[in-house]
Image: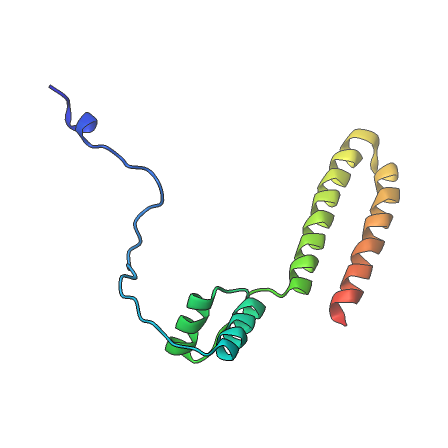
Length: 118
């Protein structure tokens, strides 16, 4: 006989959502309307269905980060990684060598902030 633990079989995969979207509603759009909706959804960083759902329920869409903002975040994360490496260098080789490298990273960060403020 198998124990209770062996009888429970986990199917794996993505967990079930608490609120299941099981009703499908169609919307007819002209080619021009579809193009406009698709462009707006793309600009917001969303799929067409999510964009239409948000507009229907809330009347507005809160866009995800723009491409420029994503590049800024990516650059800031790279600088954070460099600072972490700089800290390790300071522990290994001394603070004076690390300070010289730090000036380079600080200048990069200043330039990044100038670009973002524009």
